[in-house]
Length: 394
Image (tube, rainbow, N blue to C red; front, side):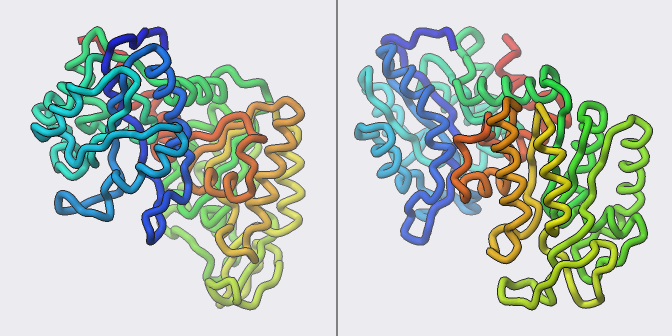
């Protein structure tokens, strides 16, 4: 970010879509912390910062539960100052306050999604938002895959005065390093529930990775496709051929695909269920796989520890339950060991980030992405609407 913000109002699109508990306390401030370097740069230059974000999915306009006012205590704490707040984003009052804000001050606008025009990518709404600042800064990677008013449409009103914030710059640099400039061997670890969510990314990764590790619920579609008995494990029967096609494509391109060899299974989807470890191809009727088994952990860890570039998206099992977290924790720890030895590791996707944070390992990997869907779409498409809008000078 080469712009000097002295005496300028920076209108910053941040991603403050953070989880709150029943008392509206922030339970994970990763995304707020990710925005701090950009906000501090503006203030240190001698400018002011007007922050805009969405929170949740409000259906019918203003809703107290989704108000950004709930973030103020945490924002004040991490910034070490009192942040001003206005309970709208395009009202006359909001413009009055943003125009009177002094250098060194920070103003937070109310939830953008209280207006349906935000998600519709409405040009007039974007034009109104643009009145709040002299320079537009897009620092919300987590929403860069959406062509919303505040993430993509607004950029046209700042043809010469727009820039990426440090968070987006870091994301793009990290993804580029993994996909294009990373040292071999490159290992991609894909988990999560569904093959259908990851088809395109798996196809892209086959052209770039040396090893692809598949865990989580999606692994059972592969196991069944290869003739295994998976009991009542999660499966997408309409994706069995897709799984076989992915395996065949990988073999043709000499990419190693690793599927679990054993699984921790349960007779119920519960932490209190009866559990045992079995060959992944022989899960009894009435039982379901909820984590990878210990033999699989050893195989996956061996692959990860010999990697120089690592991308991790998606857990190995239902890590939210203590009896089924071993596989996810094991992979997370193996990534940290490889990173310590010099590998570059990028963690992306909500659940992988949640796992890294659960085990307090965020500072032992190279980069933790703030964007789940955005990261996957960027890898799939090579660009995003929010990124394109910033690079286009019209």
